[in-house]
Each structure stands twice: as structure tokens, then as C-alpha cells.
Length: 339
Image (cartoon, rainbow, N blue to C red; front, side, top):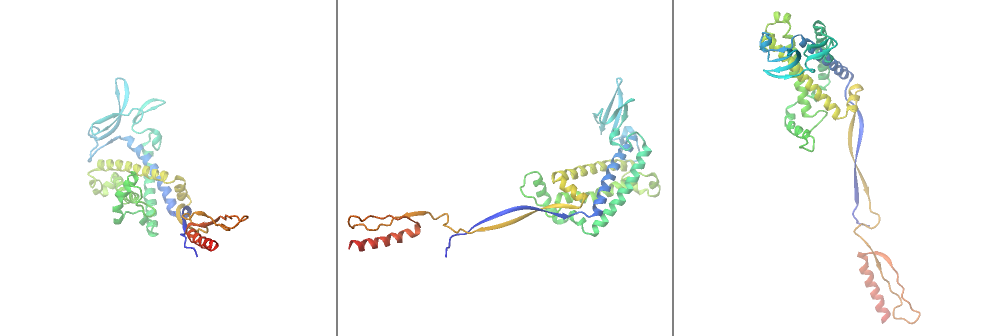
């Protein structure tokens, strides 16, 4: 029975399997909200073009605006500027001025990014109000349905996730090798989704309602809670770009973590999960182990006898551990022949 060591070979294989991640309601409400957000953003820029200034308080005096996009005639040439708290930057050709077939036209945001593309304030408001209600009702359906089936709890930040925020940030900055992520969403994603669901979305809805003259009559506390209607308008505008920032980050995550896989899961519901499996293949050493070497052994017969006697050399492969007993045995045979 050999007691040679057994060599084991361990292999790590990476496999994948499709898992059903997003149900139909989740997928439908996600894409409806994506469409609604895009139209809300573009129609909101159309509404802003009607008065391209932002104020704090209740009054709207252009000279008191803290932010403006405008155009002015300087030495017979029209130039556009964007101004923030007195700091002015020329933005001719980008913001404040658009070149048309009829010549240069003052316009805060260009037509290719607004709905409608031409100047129509009433049309912009209709698009904005319709998709605002669609966004609210569709978002409520998404939240209630996924709260009931437990999906919401996967991306809501919990107290135990707070300690993983810094390690996750270090991982994205390439200062940490291993990701602290557990589950489908990492701590930074949970922080972003929680902020959007429970802070950003309620604030942008309420600030939008605070700008309605009809609601101001019935609920005068609405604009008052923001410090006036113009403050509510400014906060609504700034929150819009926070939504844009969140959306860009969301798209970046989709691209960097596998755009095809992520898009398939949001269209069909099926997501390809990577599974790591350990396979242990045990290979038993049937022959000599690597530590054993083959050594030739010399066997002599007929030494000391007459003519015709010849020495026969027989080389047999034996292990070093067996060579010494073999030589002793041969020595005994030689002594018998000499006697």
C-alpha cells in the first residue's frame, strides 16, 4: 500500500445562468417613467424660455435675478450670455442665442432640446402638465407594487449599509481591490435610489404644485414653505438638473456593468448572473512521486570463477530507498562464493 502524497488540482470555473429579475409591472413602469422624465425635462426648458431668469422670494424683477440666460446687442452684433450671481460667461451659439433662417434669435435653450421645438409657451405647459401627472401616477404604481412584492427593499438604504459607503467609494476610485457589494445593488446605488424616491421626487412635485396660481389661492402655505413662488420655481429648476445628473449616472452604471445584459433584463426580465463554481479534480499518483528518482543497480554474478566466467550486469530500475538492502544482499552472495 503506497503512502505517496496525493496531488489535487482545483479549478475555478465561471458559469452563467439566466434569472428572472424584473417583472412586467416593473419593466413597464420603468420605461413609462423614463419617457415621462425626458418629455418633462424638454417641455420644462420650453417653459423656462418664456422667462429665462431665476429669483429667490416672491417677486420677479430681471435685474434682481441670481441666474439669467440672455442675449444683447453689442456694437451691432448680438451676443449671448449666461450669468450666475453677477459672474457672466459668453455662450453665443450654445445658450441664449440661436441662429435661424430668419437670422439670430434670442432663445435661452435651443429648439433641438425643447418640446415643442418652436416657441409655444401654452404647448410646452400642456406637454409638461400631462406627463407630470403620468409620472406621478406611474411612479406610485411602481412603488406600491414593488413595495408589496419586496423588490423596493433591495435598493433602499438601510443602517447596516452606512458602513459600506466609504469602502464602495474607495472601490470605484480603484483604491480598494474587493467590492463590498452584497445583493443586486451596492450601497452607493441604494443611497442614490433612496434619495431620489424619498427626497428628490417629493420635493420636485411639491415645488411644481407651489407654482400653480390656482393652488396658491386654496393652499397659500405651498409657496410659503419655499419662501415664495419664485423660490419654488428656482428650486424646481435646480432639482430638474439633479434628476438629469441621477439619470446620467444611472445610464453610466448600465453601460459599465454590461449594457446588453442590463437592457435585456429591463426588456425581457431575464438577467444573466455570473456563477463561480469550484471543481476539485483529484489526481492520484499511480507511478513514482516527483521526489523519487530512478537509480540503476549493479548486480554481479560469477566473479572469481574461471575462464568463461563472465560478469553479468543487470540494471534494474529501483528506488533509492530500495538500493541499500539490495547491495547488502549482493555482498552476502559474494562472500559465499569466495569461501
